[in-house]
Length: 113
Length: 115
Image 1 (tube, chains in turn orange, red):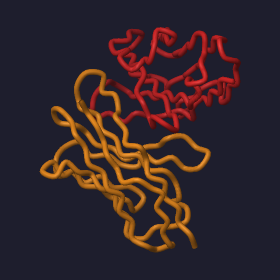
Image 2 (cartoon, chains in turn brown, yellow):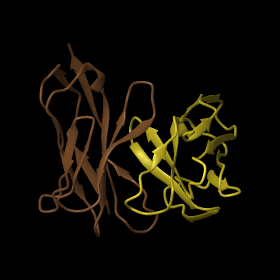
Image 3 (cartoon, rainbow over the protein chains, first blue to last red):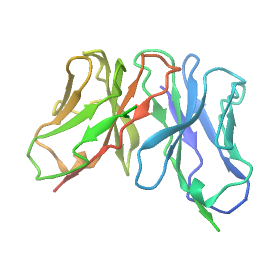
């Protein structure tokens, strides 16, 4: 079956530090990959996505590249801000059946001034 | 435009009671999903609707759980004879069409607490 593994948190960084959150996956077929973010007290919202190998998704300074050879979709940001404090979820949809999302456990990021 | 809305936002119930959770998807979205978010299990898929049909109910944890969708719009998730392990945040999501590349837009969730 499908699965997503992402680094356990919590992660605490100082403002302007570099961020990497690792995500690897196992899937049948050719999945699409997503990063969702959940800010405190809010719902899940899409941060970025990539639908085929070597695609790079980007949004709000965050980037992730779909690496088929390493089955990875690591999230990066060059300079984090306090406002980036949230829980980040890596997810996949395997492009077949119900297209349900399979999520990782989530990584809580705290950015301190 | 309006996003996905869910009601109630919070629900406290006693063990053994039935509860109904409502989801209003984004207008025109044909696909609708229910997920459950709990501390121990993370985010889990429950059921998928395409229009009013539910071709995938594989995530429903027991026969106490059921869902329907009417008019290709509003969906209701019903939990009968609630148990304490049903306590979780129930999330609804919709997408314009079905497809692995489609973005699913999530509602704010209903936080259910079973005492």
